Length: 156
Image (cartoon, rainbow, N blue to C red; front, side):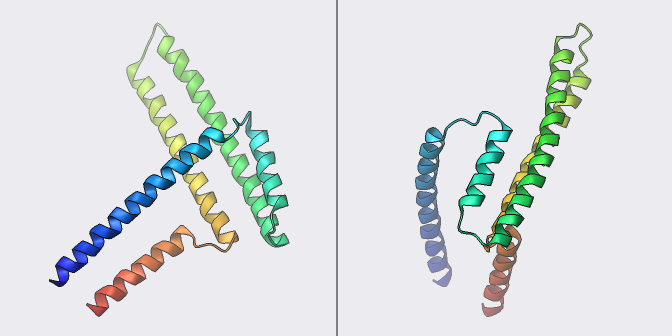
């Protein structure tokens, strides 16, 4: 009976999370549709700096966020430059009379790796920013969840 109740509670929880996620998806889709296009990286950097400056954060938080933004931007520019080189090379290799399928596959693999590293950097930066802002980071959330599972296991 206890397992049935836990299963039912789990299903209700999943349903609630699913509904909340759909509402969040709709809101995000609307926000993205209304967002003005970003012309270039400099515009995005200026926007980030303006948001940081206009915030009600402590001076130290603002400084840490600006440093994080600058270091991340430099790393992202490196990824962008490498990606552009690979895309250019890919176009040349695909249109070459001496097409080499293995080389094209390798270029594609390298492009995927760079994009993965770029996204990982963005997600790590978000986590660091959350830490600066006093929010729970991914590592802290994971640790909390493990501790809760261990506590649950110990109590049952």
